[in-house]
Image (tube, rainbow, N blue to C red):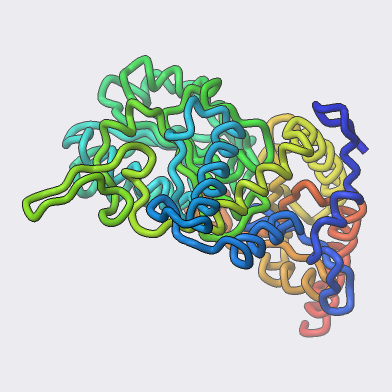
Length: 422
């Protein structure tokens, strides 16, 4: 039990009662869900918000004058305002609904970079990026003739800022960095990088897919120009994402897609674009999932993000201590819990990560295996794949104990099978 910033008690076992799937058994065992970096589970409150929209006021938004359309519009825009408050954006108009983090990043690549970058300019990113961030800038560089540069990592798995003044230079026009690595769990010093970017006149985009669900994120404190994240990693539905942008930058950008609500006026000769945020929300939006994302924000706000982060830090510290007891397993990334989030990637000296994942699934334990859409980073550690356990608000120490015991069983099984084959 922990006390939230509002003085409420954060009882993990009580929280778990809100998540129907956690009562499920898998292969005869109680489900232990540790794949939260890929997607989180959904509380009843979010599921209810989806059902309520479709059962009571399913209608299109913004253009209707009938009751259902007005109710849908109000709920849709109320969800936007909740997200604005959640990340401390200056105005609701700076919050753009997208499909996911990837689309948010692509929106910036196409609508901002294409206009403001030219051959000879430089884009700076880190060696820890998700493919969605890395590939977007690779393609822009190929198209525009810009150069992509990388901020390196230390041996411990932290961002190495020792040469930041050389990497981010007068040629730098855009910096794109993850806030928390989806492989290493490393927390990136975004504020410090943003200060350097702005000092040379560059803008900074932050991939917040792994940070916004887990820790307090304040876009004004970070002073980021863009922030991208997804609903499905923070208790919300799939298929809905957010792009935050500073209003003055968004105003200067051209639309990413065309049609429907992003239009203010049309003639046979041309068109005028709608105001923010609608300029970037072409077509009928994902109304239900936006509303349900608002419900997810409500849920997290009721817990208190300080309490959420404190819970995860304590759980991460416990998990790292338990991993240290395993002789043949290796944690990839920082081992100091104060420098990382609750995503722990690991390997075994002899057993392939996919075999570990399969063995754990037989025990009802869900983890992730592979390169986690960060292939260059994983390869830089000398691995083709790693196993990953990632925690969230409903996980507890008992589940970490199950994971550790499961890993011991998997090791024993494959060692025994190997000895039989030999």
